[in-house]
Image (tube, rainbow, N blue to C red; front, side, top):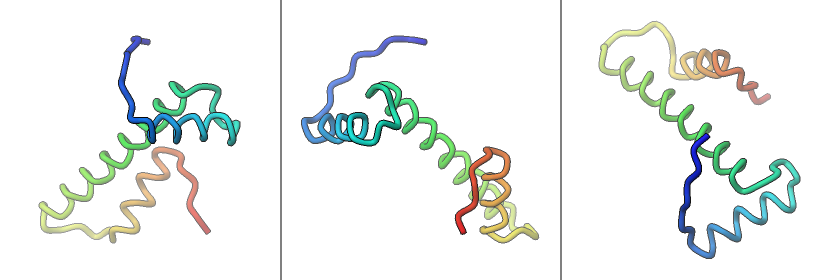
Length: 80
């Protein structure tokens, strides 16, 4: 992994610290930031697929079906 140095606003640093310290889900701010980037990349991929489908002018899948397909490929559980 590459090492980076970034500057955060005080509010963003507090938000990161809060999520690391209080949720216990992440062991460090770096781990949380990497997870946020992974999630943003997934959203970007979904948006690109939807845009391509819209531009093609035809698809038999609904937006909900396309989203479900992406979630299945990324192993993101469906909400009830």
